Image (cartoon, rainbow over all chains, first blue to last red; front, side):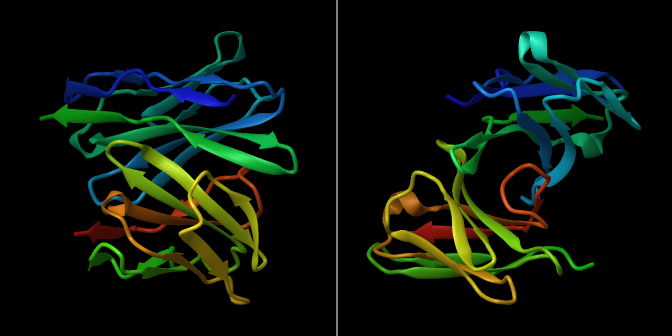
Length: 116
Length: 114
């Protein structure tokens, strides 16, 4: 069965520190999609990245980087030189086909607090 | 482009009542999905509509229903409200059906059932 585990419930760092948010997933399929979303205090989830199961290339976007490792079923997210505006809840999500439809499962989220 | 809009933003209802929430997707997006977010259960998928048809459904009782109109706007209805239905209800839109591409979320409707 699908499962997404974000073991870190809450992380607190001081501004300018680097921080890594962990995401471990379980799936039976060879074709699946992984996502990261950010939910700031305003409540609206913001899309950060999408990765399909055939693309194991790591990605860097500004201060954000993602490490996708199929061997360990992990899709970790690193923020370099964190800023107060990075404070939010971050969700990892997995999508895979189930019969004729797709299922989307979110992890429980990691609350990141960046202190000035 | 305007983002996903949801109305109302806040609602207070009494147990046993029913409620209808509305979602307008990004222009050109034909898929609308609904989610329930609670502190205890996290983010849970309710259902997805594409071209006015329900394509996917989560594990929620029949009290939760929805529909989509020809302009892709969607409504979600919850009948016979229970205290446990208190949650943030999020709507998301996507240009394609299914969950293979990113979704764009609205600000949510905060429902409180007393």
